[in-house]
Image (cartoon, rainbow, N blue to C red):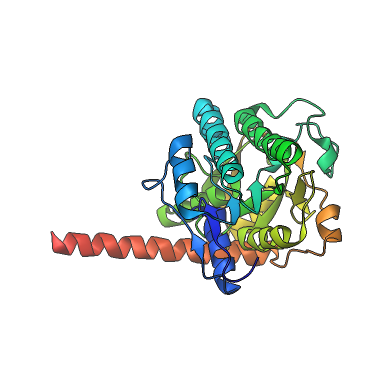
Amino acid sequence: MTPASRIYVAGHAGLVGSAIMRRLEREGFTNVLTATRRQLDLRDQAEVSHWFKSNRPEYVFLVAGTVGGIMANSTRPAEFIYDNLMIHGTVVHAAHQYDVTKLLYLGSSCIYPRQATQPITEDELLTGPLEPTNEWYAIAKIAGIKLCQAYRQQYGRDFISAMPTNLYGPNDNFDLTSSHVLPALIRKFHDAREAGANSVEIWGTGSPMREFLHVDDLADACLHLMQHYSEHSHINVGTGVDLSIRELAEKVRDLVYPGADLHFDTTKPDGTPRKVLDVSRLRASGWEPTIALDEGIASTYRWFLQQEADSAERRGIDTIAV
Protein backbone atom coordinates (compact mmCIF):
# COMPACT_ATOMS: atom_id res chain seq x y z
CA MET A 1 0.00 0.00 0.00
CA THR A 2 1.16 3.50 -0.84
CA PRO A 3 -0.39 6.87 0.11
CA ALA A 4 -1.98 7.00 -3.36
CA SER A 5 -3.45 3.46 -3.28
CA ARG A 6 -7.18 3.24 -3.97
CA ILE A 7 -8.59 1.92 -0.68
CA TYR A 8 -12.24 1.02 -0.15
CA VAL A 9 -13.60 0.91 3.40
CA ALA A 10 -16.88 -1.03 3.26
CA GLY A 11 -18.84 0.09 6.31
CA HIS A 12 -16.96 3.36 6.78
CA ALA A 13 -19.60 5.00 8.97
CA GLY A 14 -19.75 2.25 11.61
CA LEU A 15 -17.75 1.70 14.77
CA VAL A 16 -14.87 -0.11 13.05
CA GLY A 17 -15.08 1.60 9.68
CA SER A 18 -14.89 5.10 11.15
CA ALA A 19 -11.84 4.06 13.20
CA ILE A 20 -10.13 2.72 10.07
CA MET A 21 -10.94 5.99 8.30
CA ARG A 22 -9.28 7.95 11.12
CA ARG A 23 -6.25 5.66 11.02
CA LEU A 24 -5.83 5.92 7.25
CA GLU A 25 -6.11 9.71 7.42
CA ARG A 26 -3.40 9.87 10.10
CA GLU A 27 -1.12 7.74 7.92
CA GLY A 28 -1.59 10.09 4.97
CA PHE A 29 -3.63 7.88 2.64
CA THR A 30 -5.33 10.28 0.23
CA ASN A 31 -7.42 8.05 -2.04
CA VAL A 32 -9.92 6.41 0.32
CA LEU A 33 -13.21 5.33 -1.25
CA THR A 34 -16.55 5.10 0.58
CA ALA A 35 -20.23 4.63 -0.22
CA THR A 36 -23.22 5.24 2.02
CA ARG A 37 -26.07 2.75 2.37
CA ARG A 38 -28.21 4.96 0.15
CA GLN A 39 -25.54 5.00 -2.52
CA LEU A 40 -24.78 1.27 -2.42
CA ASP A 41 -26.76 -1.68 -1.05
CA LEU A 42 -24.02 -4.14 -0.15
CA ARG A 43 -26.56 -6.98 -0.22
CA ASP A 44 -27.11 -6.51 -3.95
CA GLN A 45 -24.52 -8.24 -6.13
CA ALA A 46 -25.35 -6.24 -9.26
CA GLU A 47 -24.98 -2.92 -7.44
CA VAL A 48 -21.75 -3.96 -5.75
CA SER A 49 -20.20 -5.32 -8.94
CA HIS A 50 -21.11 -2.12 -10.80
CA TRP A 51 -19.56 -0.01 -8.04
CA PHE A 52 -16.31 -2.02 -8.11
CA LYS A 53 -16.18 -1.78 -11.90
CA SER A 54 -16.60 2.00 -11.74
CA ASN A 55 -14.25 2.68 -8.82
CA ARG A 56 -11.60 -0.06 -9.13
CA PRO A 57 -10.34 -0.22 -5.53
CA GLU A 58 -6.94 -1.86 -5.03
CA TYR A 59 -7.36 -2.64 -1.32
CA VAL A 60 -10.57 -3.41 0.57
CA PHE A 61 -11.33 -3.33 4.28
CA LEU A 62 -14.55 -5.35 4.55
CA VAL A 63 -15.90 -4.22 7.93
CA ALA A 64 -19.58 -3.71 7.01
CA GLY A 65 -22.34 -5.78 8.59
CA THR A 66 -25.44 -5.97 10.73
CA VAL A 67 -24.32 -6.14 14.36
CA GLY A 68 -25.81 -6.06 17.85
CA GLY A 69 -25.89 -7.57 21.31
CA ILE A 70 -27.75 -10.54 22.78
CA MET A 71 -31.20 -8.94 22.51
CA ALA A 72 -30.75 -7.93 18.87
CA ASN A 73 -29.38 -11.35 17.93
CA SER A 74 -32.22 -13.12 19.73
CA THR A 75 -35.04 -11.09 18.20
CA ARG A 76 -33.71 -10.51 14.66
CA PRO A 77 -32.00 -13.78 13.66
CA ALA A 78 -33.09 -13.67 10.01
CA GLU A 79 -31.68 -10.17 9.53
CA PHE A 80 -28.40 -11.12 11.15
CA ILE A 81 -27.75 -14.16 9.02
CA TYR A 82 -29.17 -12.83 5.72
CA ASP A 83 -27.64 -9.36 5.76
CA ASN A 84 -24.20 -10.58 6.75
CA LEU A 85 -24.11 -13.53 4.37
CA MET A 86 -25.08 -11.30 1.48
CA ILE A 87 -22.67 -8.48 2.34
CA HIS A 88 -19.74 -10.86 2.64
CA GLY A 89 -20.65 -12.66 -0.57
CA THR A 90 -21.16 -9.63 -2.79
CA VAL A 91 -18.05 -7.72 -1.73
CA VAL A 92 -15.68 -10.70 -1.81
CA HIS A 93 -16.97 -11.78 -5.23
CA ALA A 94 -16.71 -8.27 -6.67
CA ALA A 95 -13.19 -7.97 -5.27
CA HIS A 96 -12.30 -11.10 -7.23
CA GLN A 97 -14.14 -9.94 -10.36
CA TYR A 98 -12.29 -6.63 -10.51
CA ASP A 99 -8.86 -7.82 -9.44
CA VAL A 100 -8.50 -6.26 -5.99
CA THR A 101 -4.89 -6.59 -4.83
CA LYS A 102 -5.78 -7.45 -1.22
CA LEU A 103 -8.89 -7.70 0.93
CA LEU A 104 -9.13 -7.84 4.71
CA TYR A 105 -12.36 -9.35 6.04
CA LEU A 106 -13.27 -8.66 9.65
CA GLY A 107 -15.15 -11.34 11.54
CA SER A 108 -15.91 -11.73 15.24
CA SER A 109 -14.75 -13.85 18.15
CA CYS A 110 -18.29 -15.26 18.39
CA ILE A 111 -17.27 -17.67 15.61
CA TYR A 112 -15.74 -19.94 18.24
CA PRO A 113 -17.59 -22.74 20.09
CA ARG A 114 -19.34 -21.92 23.34
CA GLN A 115 -17.08 -24.30 25.23
CA ALA A 116 -13.86 -23.51 23.38
CA THR A 117 -10.59 -24.04 25.24
CA GLN A 118 -9.44 -20.76 26.77
CA PRO A 119 -7.60 -18.68 25.70
CA ILE A 120 -9.07 -19.40 22.27
CA THR A 121 -6.62 -20.19 19.47
CA GLU A 122 -7.51 -19.90 15.81
CA ASP A 123 -7.58 -23.71 15.61
CA GLU A 124 -10.72 -23.85 17.79
CA LEU A 125 -12.92 -22.87 14.84
CA LEU A 126 -15.61 -25.50 14.05
CA THR A 127 -14.62 -27.77 16.95
CA GLY A 128 -17.96 -27.58 18.80
CA PRO A 129 -21.46 -26.05 19.08
CA LEU A 130 -21.84 -22.28 18.98
CA GLU A 131 -23.29 -20.00 21.65
CA PRO A 132 -27.08 -20.05 20.94
CA THR A 133 -27.60 -16.35 21.69
CA ASN A 134 -25.55 -15.26 18.67
CA GLU A 135 -25.31 -18.33 16.45
CA TRP A 136 -26.94 -16.64 13.42
CA TYR A 137 -24.34 -13.90 13.35
CA ALA A 138 -21.58 -16.41 14.07
CA ILE A 139 -22.59 -18.69 11.20
CA ALA A 140 -22.52 -15.76 8.79
CA LYS A 141 -19.07 -14.74 10.04
CA ILE A 142 -17.74 -18.29 9.70
CA ALA A 143 -19.05 -18.32 6.14
CA GLY A 144 -17.13 -15.10 5.50
CA ILE A 145 -13.87 -16.68 6.64
CA LYS A 146 -14.43 -19.72 4.47
CA LEU A 147 -15.40 -17.51 1.54
CA CYS A 148 -12.05 -15.71 1.68
CA GLN A 149 -10.22 -19.01 1.99
CA ALA A 150 -12.11 -20.46 -0.98
CA TYR A 151 -11.24 -17.52 -3.25
CA ARG A 152 -7.63 -17.75 -2.07
CA GLN A 153 -7.53 -21.49 -2.79
CA GLN A 154 -9.32 -21.46 -6.15
CA TYR A 155 -8.21 -18.13 -7.60
CA GLY A 156 -5.05 -17.28 -5.67
CA ARG A 157 -6.60 -14.15 -4.20
CA ASP A 158 -4.84 -12.40 -1.32
CA PHE A 159 -7.95 -12.29 0.86
CA ILE A 160 -7.28 -12.47 4.62
CA SER A 161 -9.51 -12.62 7.70
CA ALA A 162 -9.11 -11.15 11.18
CA MET A 163 -11.24 -12.02 14.22
CA PRO A 164 -11.47 -9.23 16.80
CA THR A 165 -12.62 -9.61 20.37
CA ASN A 166 -15.37 -7.41 21.90
CA LEU A 167 -14.97 -3.85 20.65
CA TYR A 168 -15.86 -0.41 22.00
CA GLY A 169 -15.04 3.25 21.39
CA PRO A 170 -16.21 6.35 19.47
CA ASN A 171 -19.21 5.83 17.17
CA ASP A 172 -20.39 2.81 19.14
CA ASN A 173 -24.10 2.01 19.39
CA PHE A 174 -25.59 3.06 22.74
CA ASP A 175 -29.17 1.97 21.98
CA LEU A 176 -30.18 -0.47 24.72
CA THR A 177 -32.26 -2.58 22.33
CA SER A 178 -29.31 -3.41 20.07
CA SER A 179 -26.03 -2.46 21.75
CA HIS A 180 -23.20 -4.61 23.07
CA VAL A 181 -22.43 -4.87 26.76
CA LEU A 182 -19.94 -2.03 27.30
CA PRO A 183 -21.85 0.78 25.54
CA ALA A 184 -25.06 -0.58 27.12
CA LEU A 185 -23.49 -0.23 30.58
CA ILE A 186 -22.37 3.32 29.82
CA ARG A 187 -25.89 4.21 28.70
CA LYS A 188 -27.53 2.54 31.71
CA PHE A 189 -25.33 4.21 34.32
CA HIS A 190 -25.60 7.58 32.58
CA ASP A 191 -29.41 7.38 32.40
CA ALA A 192 -29.59 6.24 36.03
CA ARG A 193 -27.48 9.20 37.12
CA GLU A 194 -29.63 11.60 35.13
CA ALA A 195 -32.81 10.12 36.64
CA GLY A 196 -31.41 9.91 40.17
CA ALA A 197 -32.04 6.15 40.33
CA ASN A 198 -30.37 4.17 43.09
CA SER A 199 -29.53 1.03 41.14
CA VAL A 200 -28.74 -0.18 37.62
CA GLU A 201 -30.01 -3.45 36.18
CA ILE A 202 -27.49 -5.68 34.46
CA TRP A 203 -28.36 -8.78 32.46
CA GLY A 204 -27.27 -12.16 33.81
CA THR A 205 -25.18 -13.13 36.81
CA GLY A 206 -22.18 -10.93 36.16
CA SER A 207 -19.89 -13.96 36.12
CA PRO A 208 -19.09 -14.34 32.39
CA MET A 209 -15.55 -13.35 31.46
CA ARG A 210 -14.99 -11.03 28.51
CA GLU A 211 -12.09 -9.33 26.73
CA PHE A 212 -12.36 -5.80 25.32
CA LEU A 213 -10.37 -3.97 22.65
CA HIS A 214 -10.59 -0.28 21.83
CA VAL A 215 -11.64 0.21 18.22
CA ASP A 216 -8.68 2.52 17.52
CA ASP A 217 -6.37 -0.33 18.49
CA LEU A 218 -8.31 -2.60 16.13
CA ALA A 219 -7.92 -0.09 13.29
CA ASP A 220 -4.20 0.00 13.90
CA ALA A 221 -4.11 -3.83 13.86
CA CYS A 222 -6.09 -3.94 10.60
CA LEU A 223 -3.63 -1.63 8.86
CA HIS A 224 -0.74 -3.71 10.24
CA LEU A 225 -2.31 -6.93 8.93
CA MET A 226 -3.08 -5.43 5.54
CA GLN A 227 0.60 -4.57 5.22
CA HIS A 228 2.24 -7.55 6.93
CA TYR A 229 -0.06 -10.61 6.98
CA SER A 230 -0.96 -12.86 4.08
CA GLU A 231 -1.98 -16.32 5.30
CA HIS A 232 -4.80 -18.79 4.62
CA SER A 233 -5.80 -18.94 8.30
CA HIS A 234 -7.75 -16.20 10.02
CA ILE A 235 -5.95 -14.40 12.84
CA ASN A 236 -7.20 -13.30 16.27
CA VAL A 237 -7.07 -9.62 17.29
CA GLY A 238 -7.38 -8.71 20.96
CA THR A 239 -5.55 -7.98 24.18
CA GLY A 240 -5.41 -11.50 25.62
CA VAL A 241 -6.72 -10.12 28.94
CA ASP A 242 -10.27 -10.55 30.27
CA LEU A 243 -12.43 -9.58 33.24
CA SER A 244 -15.88 -10.47 34.55
CA ILE A 245 -19.00 -8.57 33.55
CA ARG A 246 -19.36 -7.62 37.21
CA GLU A 247 -15.86 -6.13 37.22
CA LEU A 248 -16.62 -4.29 33.99
CA ALA A 249 -19.88 -2.93 35.43
CA GLU A 250 -18.00 -1.72 38.50
CA LYS A 251 -15.47 0.11 36.32
CA VAL A 252 -18.23 1.86 34.38
CA ARG A 253 -20.17 2.59 37.59
CA ASP A 254 -17.12 4.14 39.27
CA LEU A 255 -16.56 6.40 36.26
CA VAL A 256 -20.13 7.38 35.38
CA TYR A 257 -22.23 7.07 38.55
CA PRO A 258 -20.21 6.26 41.68
CA GLY A 259 -22.26 4.79 44.48
CA ALA A 260 -24.98 3.24 42.32
CA ASP A 261 -26.02 -0.28 43.27
CA LEU A 262 -25.70 -3.16 40.80
CA HIS A 263 -28.78 -5.32 40.32
CA PHE A 264 -28.16 -8.51 38.34
CA ASP A 265 -31.22 -9.89 36.56
CA THR A 266 -30.46 -13.60 36.60
CA THR A 267 -33.53 -14.38 34.48
CA LYS A 268 -31.61 -12.93 31.52
CA PRO A 269 -28.99 -14.96 29.61
CA ASP A 270 -25.28 -14.77 30.37
CA GLY A 271 -24.07 -15.86 26.96
CA THR A 272 -20.77 -17.71 26.63
CA PRO A 273 -19.18 -18.37 30.08
CA ARG A 274 -15.75 -17.12 29.04
CA LYS A 275 -14.27 -15.69 25.86
CA VAL A 276 -10.67 -14.52 25.71
CA LEU A 277 -8.51 -14.82 22.61
CA ASP A 278 -5.06 -16.27 22.22
CA VAL A 279 -3.30 -13.47 20.35
CA SER A 280 0.15 -15.03 20.15
CA ARG A 281 0.11 -15.14 16.33
CA LEU A 282 -0.66 -11.43 16.13
CA ARG A 283 2.02 -10.55 18.67
CA ALA A 284 4.53 -12.68 16.76
CA SER A 285 3.78 -10.54 13.70
CA GLY A 286 4.91 -7.46 15.62
CA TRP A 287 1.66 -5.86 16.85
CA GLU A 288 0.51 -4.99 20.40
CA PRO A 289 -2.48 -2.95 21.68
CA THR A 290 -1.70 0.39 23.32
CA ILE A 291 -4.99 1.62 24.86
CA ALA A 292 -5.64 0.40 28.41
CA LEU A 293 -9.24 -0.49 29.30
CA ASP A 294 -9.69 2.22 31.95
CA GLU A 295 -8.34 4.85 29.58
CA GLY A 296 -10.51 3.56 26.75
CA ILE A 297 -13.72 3.55 28.80
CA ALA A 298 -13.05 7.10 30.00
CA SER A 299 -12.42 8.43 26.49
CA THR A 300 -15.49 6.61 25.16
CA TYR A 301 -17.66 8.16 27.86
CA ARG A 302 -16.29 11.60 27.03
CA TRP A 303 -17.24 10.98 23.40
CA PHE A 304 -20.71 9.83 24.47
CA LEU A 305 -21.22 12.98 26.57
CA GLN A 306 -20.19 15.19 23.66
CA GLN A 307 -22.72 13.46 21.40
CA GLU A 308 -25.42 13.94 24.02
CA ALA A 309 -24.53 17.64 24.32
CA ASP A 310 -24.50 18.09 20.54
CA SER A 311 -27.87 16.35 20.24
CA ALA A 312 -29.36 18.56 22.95
CA GLU A 313 -28.01 21.66 21.21
CA ARG A 314 -29.52 20.59 17.89
CA ARG A 315 -32.89 19.99 19.54
CA GLY A 316 -32.70 23.44 21.12
CA ILE A 317 -31.90 25.06 17.77
CA ASP A 318 -34.79 23.18 16.15
CA THR A 319 -37.16 24.36 18.86
CA ILE A 320 -36.10 27.97 18.44
CA ALA A 321 -36.44 27.71 14.67
CA VAL A 322 -39.99 26.41 14.98
